[in-house]
Image 1 (cartoon, rainbow, N blue to C red):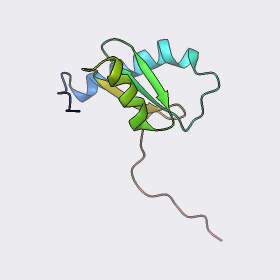
Image 2: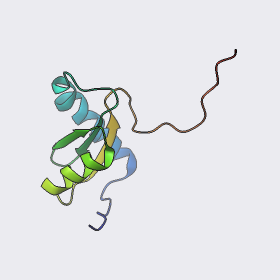
Image 3: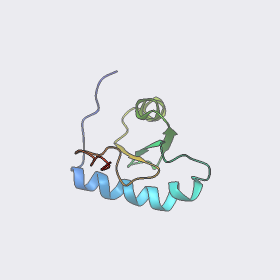
Image 4: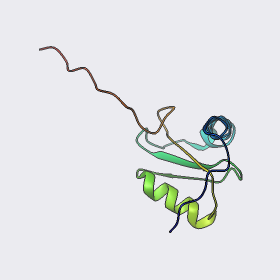
Length: 90
C-alpha cells in the first residue's frame, strides 16, 4: 500500500477533522473507550474507530483509498502525547 499525498495544510486538516468529530462522530460514541482511535476522512466524513490506530486507518483506506485522514483518540484532542510525565513523589 502506497502513501497518499496530503492535499491540505495541516491546520486545515485539523480544523475539518475537529468539525466532523464534533458534529458527526461524538454523538455516536456511546460505549467507546477513551483508548480508542478515530480515523476520519476530512473530505467525505467517513470514519473508523479501533483500539489500534493502524487498524482504524487501514479499514478507512479500504473504503476510501485516497482518504485525507485526521486521527485522534476518543478521550483526547490528539492521538499522541509528546514529552515526559512527572513521577509521583514518594
